[in-house]
Image 1 (cartoon, rainbow, N blue to C red):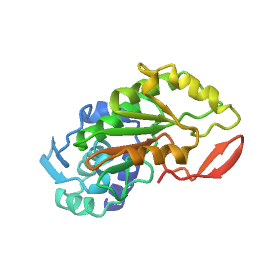
Image 2 (image 1 turned 180 degrees about the vertical axis):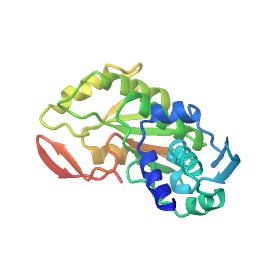
Image 3 (image 1 turned 60 degrees about the horizontal axis):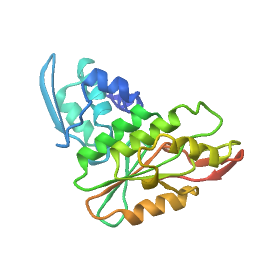
Image 4 (image 1 turned 180 degrees about the horizontal axis):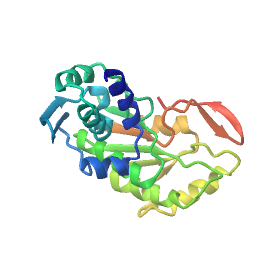
Length: 231
């Protein structure tokens, strides 16, 4: 049962966030850093490990699944403290400067909006967002992603993701179409430079979200795989 519980954590952390919100009722994440809910066996509560604060809704799904499969609450609490962040999914990245950095694979408007709401609930200061859109795929989410970014962050930096064979200029132009205030959006084509700009902007208490690519180790530009890890 314990091995199944550990597998459930990985499974739940990759759930579509819309499903997590529907099943857990996690549309508005609690910033308290603790799980607390009622299940068939009574009330359950436990602190959320620091590295898993970004996947609190999925973590609750995994905890519920473990309890319903017969894992004791005391065992669940003990195992919670042993869990590591899931690479590229609400993953915190340690940096100096007194602000938080998060890497998440959110590449759909609703998933990005949800994750930004998670970060907002955990952040006393401002939020910056660095994101791009992949090329050679459905372009319709591009403006919607920008609109979600504007609504969830004080600073939005648009950049390259995996443009593949599609010109980056066209991708950025599509993304800017969703901006309510295009003049406030920064466009920095080079992804490393875009991340550097957001980090330079951040102050103690702020947060920087690097979205869209998760744990991918390579960036595909003009059909060439270039080493690029957002973490």
